[in-house]
Length: 507
Image (cartoon, rainbow, N blue to C red; front, side, top):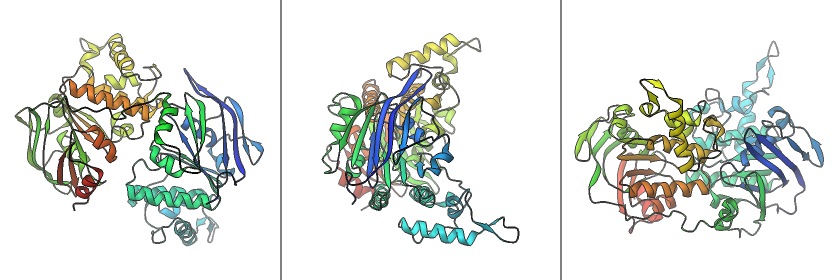
C-alpha cells in the first residue's frame, strides 16, 4: 500500500467559498489530496461535502478560492473540463444510459470510429477495451455487450469506475458508493478501490457509513456548516466512529439509538396473515402491537419492501388477510390505505417520497388538501402555517419552506417525507423503508428520537433497514425474511447480528 505521507500532493483546494440564496454552503475551505491515498470526507447533511465535490466536478463554480493540480492553478468551468484534468466523479445517481451496453457506456462520447465513412463505432474494439478495463476491476467474465439495465447495482458501480479508468483518471471521487450494496458487494468494492489507490490513484471517499470511512481511509477531513473542522490521520486505522461523530455534530451523541421498549402495548394494531403475491413473497404472517417498532430484516431481494408495499395498497396481495385493530381491511389502493390510517416512508425518497420540483412546503401539504384549503380553494396562509410547525419541531434547515425540495440535504428531505404523514392525520401504522439511508448521523439520531416519540403516543411502526445494528438498536421485535418468506422472529433480548444473518440466509 502506498502510504498517505509518501505520495505527492496531486490536488489542492485553497480557501474555497460558495454561497447559495440564504445558505453559505462553503466558507474558506482548504483541502489537500495525495497520490495513492483514500481520503475520506465526512459531515452531516448540509455540511458542504457534495458542494465541494461539485466544484471539482465542474458543476458549481466557487465564489472565491483556487484549485491547484500538481502545483498549477486550474479552472474547472464545466464537467468536460473536470474530465480533461483527469478528475472523475461518481455520484450517488449513476450517469449511465440503461439501454446501452457496458462497452457503449464506458466509451460514451469517445467511441473509436472507422468503416467506409469513418463514422461507424468500432464495436468489437470497444468490447475488447471495455473487457480489459473490467478485468482490471476484477470482473473478467462480465459480458460487455449486455445492457447496463440488466446489471446489479454493484456491477453498475464498477462500470462507472471503468469509465474513469478509460478516461485515464488520476483522481476518483466516490459519493456514497455503498448506499445500496450488500455487505459482500461492499467488501468486493473495497478491494477494487484499495487496489486503485495502491496503483497510485488518488481517491476521495464520501460516506455516511462511518465504519467504512474508518476502515478504508488514510486521512479523513470533517466538515461542519461549510467549514473544515479537523483533518485526521488514520494511517494506523485508530480513528474511532465516536470521535468522528463528535467532530461532525459538535457534541457527544450518547446512546446513539436511544430506543426504549416501554411504549409497547398488549393490544395488536395490525395483524397480517398468510399474505402472498405470486413471484414476490409467500405466506407472510406477523403482528404489530400499538407503540411497537417491528423490524423487517433480511438481505436485498428477501421481499421486505414488496410485503410493505402490498400492505400499503401499492401492489395488493393475491392471497392473505390484513386486520387493522381487529377489523379486516383490504387496502386495494394507496388511497384506501391512507384513509385507513397508514403512512409510508419509501425506500427511495427522491423518486417515491417527494416531488423534487415542488417546494418543501407543498410537499408537506400534498397528502393533506383539507388542511390547506377553504371552500375548495387553496389557502396560502394555512399552507404556510402547516409547514412552519414541522420546520420548527423537526429542525428542517434552512428554514425556507418556499425552497424547492431538490435543494435541501438528504436528511432534511427525509424529515419532510415523514412530516407530510404526521400533518393532521390520525395515523395508526407508519411504514418506514430504509428511513436513514443517505442520512447523516445527526439527522439519524433525530429520526430515532422521533420514532420513540411516535411510539410513545401509541403509533405502531414497521421498520426496514439493511443495517443490522440499526435494526437491533431501534426495534422491539424483529421478523427476518429470506426468499420471500418469513424465516425467523426474535425479541430484542434474544437477537444478535449472527442470529439475524443465519435466518437471513435461511440456515
